[in-house]
Image 1 (cartoon, rainbow, N blue to C red):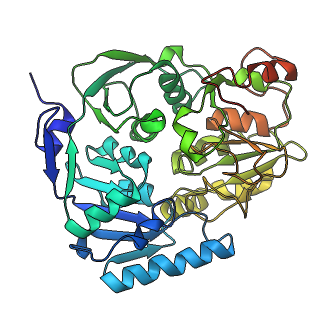
Image 2 (cartoon, rainbow, N blue to C red):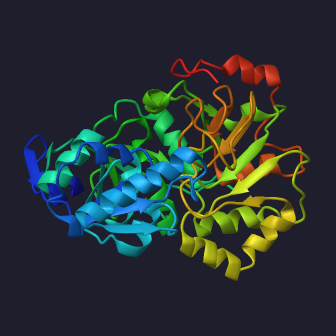
Length: 397
């Protein structure tokens, strides 16, 4: 039987213990900055990239303190340090990572690198510290789930909706490597699928032209979908899913194009096109966060930023704005935010009782525009939304 991608890159068969030397280790000011407290040496500083990419420029005094902390760490151990380049993983995907490379980070969304045939591995701060100190990573090679991609998306759906539908229907993928196989997808769509695949606990993800499939992702069956709020960061992988039709008749206070997902030039083009002939709803706060500086520059050159400003949107600095407890884009008490970002836990985007939901560009822009159509599906009352709360995976919004 032909080896799976994960077996090829780790150099061992499923169930065996693999020991590898990563080609790159990424440390950011996001969830992995705490690793600096656990490291006493860095064995291969030339392989380490320290990057300030979350909630930039520093959105709070604490963010400013963390900036100084990781900068000091980088200087002490002689690693590369980057800022003002945008989201770390998007930067690596577009600028640095090559097929066959192994990259270890502190983010479960490192799986996005599988879109170009690299292995992105998200680990705990403790494990990340061990990798930094030894230059080695040890793991039991996980089982692979092959997913045949077929069909095409409807006009009211995006690849984010497809990924959310996949996660909703696939239980038991925790700890597995996901291989998305085939499909008439753009490079951007491949990246989004891989990026989101670990949202319920998968180990990593890849896109490949051919492979052995155990299930199917039929894009024809995609409907607008939401990732629902959850109580805290530790429960994020258990956050539930609901069709976006539950939004009909509900007050949505803000939308965010960007975060740890979204904000690429492809997303910005799509969102800008949806402003044509429309106005921003009175009181709706739309924040646009380019994923990388290159996306921001390209959007300016194409006139996209001007279109957003004319529509009434606010533009944030390029970077990861998926967790903003304080700063630009934060939500107030009881407010509801739709975001392309992948974190929906309480307090992730402002007040603890603000409701944060992951949605596609299509759903967010429909909610932001002055039309009454919020999701492209049959309307339901506000009480209908309330009746759904907490029914999926025991989550509550």
